Amino acid sequence: MALKGDKTNIKNKMFDSDDIILEYMLKIPILKNDLITGEDSYNLTEKEYRFMMEMWTAETFDIHHKMYEFKIVKIDGKTAVYLKLHHIICDAWGVLLTGEKIVDYYYKTAYLLKIPKEEVPQYEQYIQKEQDYLASKRYEKDEAFWKAKYEKKPSFVTLSPNQKSDHDVKAKRNSYVISEKETEAIHQYCEKNNISSAILLEAVTALYAARINNANDVTLCSLVINRSGADEKNTIGMYNNILPLTIAMNYEETFEELCQKVLAEHYEVYRHQKYPLANILNIIREKHGKDVELYDIMVSYQNGQFSEEVSEKAEAQWIFNGTSDLGFMLNISDRNNDGRITFDFDYRLNCFTEEEIDHIYHRFIHMVNQVIVSPDLKCKDVEIVTFEEKEQILVDFNNTLKPYPNDKCLNEYIEENAKKNPQKVALRFEGAEMTYQEFNEKANCLAHYITQQEKRRNAIIGVMTERSFEMLIAIYAIIKSGNVYMPMDVNFPTDRIHFMLQDSNAQLVLTQNKFVNRFDNALKVVDLNTFDYEKYDKTNDTHILCPFCSRVNPVSDDVCKCGAPLVK
Image (tube, rainbow, N blue to C red; front, side, top):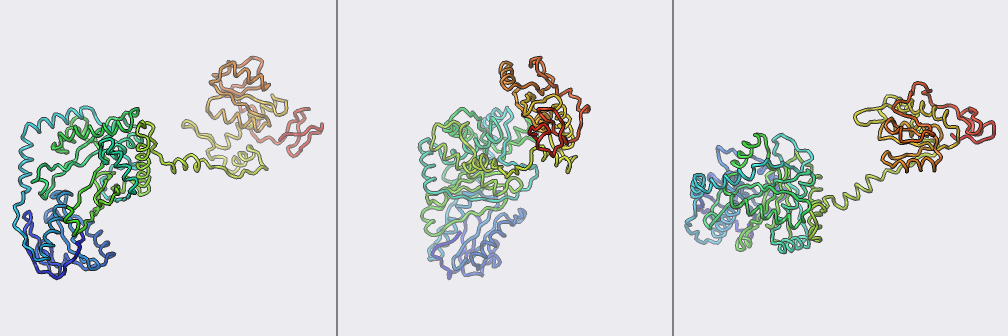
């Protein structure tokens, strides 16, 4: 928190706030008390401060000693107060109140104004109120609500492709500031549909999570301020509660209907928001098993900011502490009040990479833009893949064109590979494997058989098989024999199969046992399931059969002794 209009030569002043005594003397480094000592004051450059701030923030509290930390820093002539509070004793609202008090007292001290004794509400009042709730009828009604809500086991979804079961909470934050134009479009959409930007992003997150997990329901968690009345809103302490939002997905409904469903879920669970999250989890685990997880995704709306009077004197900077209990958290921030929304993505390092979070951000923005432009868009039609990703998938990944030398045939390449890597796997199908050597030898056997049976030049040979090793062996063997294969789908009607065979003048068909009876008796039909490969030569053919005189010619010859051209 940096203070504007800095006064550095002021005298020591003690004051009281929420039973915490703060001492401020900004002429560094003479500060002596339990909160701020000479060791807690620094004169740094901006670069040095950034480094020190990260180090301070990464340090954990010794909760048996104290759960707060204050430091005063001179940064290139400006004064900043570094404030760190444990979540056990204070929430973000309380941090904001503390910051406002610091600024107020600082300026009163700087300008020698009297700091009046204030009657401030005490956190003990809230603790007593919570104790009373636990023994109340309302608690019993809330408990009945949550038991009924999770009578059926909810789905657990995550956005992480690398979800791990360990409890490493190290995390990182990626921040994105969207343009004023995009921010205005979001605000207009939300105003039109009577929802907040948080509801919009919760709906986007829920739909995205449901789609990638193929889930029928999605549970997110939402942060509840849980402060009612002026006293609680002016008390420093921990009030926040986390509520699960479980959203049933219907892909046929429009995205606007999904937003209204999320809003209705908020209204429903907020009526029971005082019921502790730990108790909700206990209800679920007692019913569905102790290892059941409820959520790993959170969407939070952060708009807490200084009052206008304080904002003229100081500016606040919220610092991420580098840890997260959840795999994924989206913080939507309007704190800067500059007409632009900030998306802060907090993610555990054992769940996501920085690149994966970047992809998720752009997908979310892409989804938001679609539903703003097309209000009646159904959930099933909202695209979760960006234009750039679609281009990569459909164009870049399929750009497999490579120069293919025209001095060799396909069978020559396979034969070379069978010679160089005979035991290397050539084919995999339904758990079975076939090596290059076995594949080539079986094709050779079948090719020799085809050459004996089919005397015509460039004859068309029918192939009708299901996906199998036999299908590829048949195709490869026909190519080796110098003929042409004609594929026929096993689902073709019999009349169409007969027409194709008649029209192509095919006299030989390679098929499987279950399809043999579908062909005319006049055809030569080979059942590849029972074909005896051992009866034929396994070696690559070193001779060419003349299609006109049936003379066997050396493979090096281009013309038969009868004068006919030889097809290799």
